Length: 117
Length: 114
Image 1 (tube, each protein chain N blue to C red):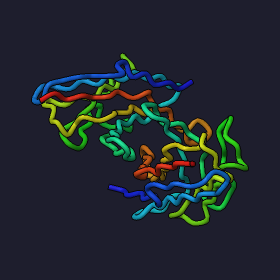
Image 2 (cartoon, rainbow over the protein chains, first blue to last red):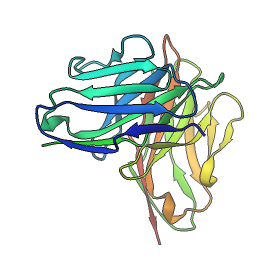
Image 3 (cartoon, rainbow over the protein chains, first blue to last red):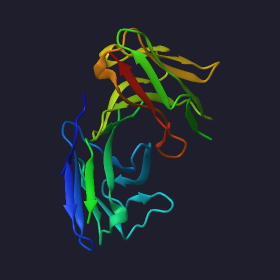
Image 4 (spheres, rainbow over the protein chains, first blue to last red):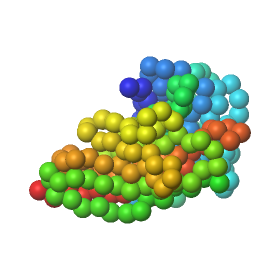
């Protein structure tokens, strides 16, 4: 099956610093990737849709200037949490959309645990 | 409008007994339906998907699901639970009304007792 990786798997940073998370589709090209946030014992919350070569589309309530998304190639999207604060601590998961003709499918990365001190 | 309802937040079964995780959906279009599994602190792994082909879909690890349009259901089943099946399961609906859109269910936590 299709494989999506994320790096790092976990990160601890100080308040006020920026953190970059990478999402890569390893064996397919993805023009569309998604970034999710997951709080403990909850479902995934879509933050933004990342489109290769164009600006990301953010969901309502998600700050564009705080969560910077870049999708510079067909296999890589990055999420940068700028000026991180403790409330940004969460589990961030990306997915990549594989076009399969009938039934496009999202394949998910393993997630990144962000802890802001 | 799309919606997904997972009818049980928790399901507990004994090892070796059948598993049933229930999912109902609504969509104005012809959706694709998915089940994903998430183990603690991990990403989501695709179990199976329905894309308007056969209504009975077989997935990995012995799981299968049946698409029933008349009941707008897509329940996940497995004949015999294994301890390693203990995890969170998400039912997901996707379609393309003007752009790819995905709706996640709230999730069902499966507990497997020895």
